[in-house]
Length: 363
Image 1: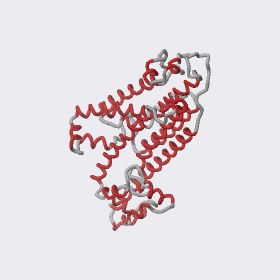
Image 2: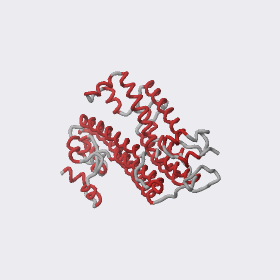
Image 3: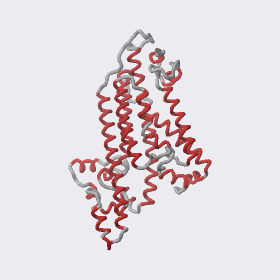
Image 4: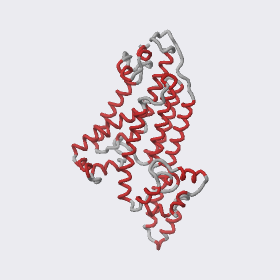
């Protein structure tokens, strides 16, 4: 049996890292050590692989896998088991979406590279971004941001599982909150209303993200089909066939413009990104549910995880918007009509009452 007295005496982050390290792979041992070993190993691995093969999307291949992996490290009670299972739901869906877009291939370091990395590498954004055309600066960027920072971010967004683990172990080993007497046995904090809210919001966000990804995937496939049939020429019925290929809720104007503007994309310009942020904000609520009875606070150090994710999506959204403006002449008009991440209340109300938002905006 591992020494768990450090859980009862002091449950600060540094104490958890420094103490209880007699057997890092003991089932009773805290998962913080294992997670830090894993994150450093993977960061080094993806840096070496991406630098060698030239494909910078190595972290992307693991993005949908690692948070669930870290969550399963922490399973000790009902709450941590629930967190592991719903993070696995998110992981399976996102992994499938990445797979169908060509992100995975054999050998594993191959596969489609995110187009944004090439934009950064080429320096086409101008300004300070031109520095990334230098191979040594790009190598440093790969090491610091792509390989190391993003791996730490994946650990940070999964970190509510670690707080839930800490609270569960305190409930089991020190029910009175005192000492480290292993003869004392207790129970972990029970599930509560916040757990139910977190679970509902998490699953709802995963569903919305799946709907957005499916809509974008189908739109891009239909757009390629439409372009192909138009290019066959009007004489052979190409344009007529192209019109027939349009999906039910997608207008001809959208195909001509080149980007999706209907359904969820009539509410926000990046619905999948918005839902991804909401997913991990919801996951954070589990850490509040686990610790509120003891701390009385709705905020803990893990809030930094989802805040960093939201900041990353601000930068990522800015980049994709810059690229879209250069590709699609009418995209700037779409920007004026539809917000980036947070939908307008009026748009949500029109959606609830069944009005065609996209049609109204076209008028």
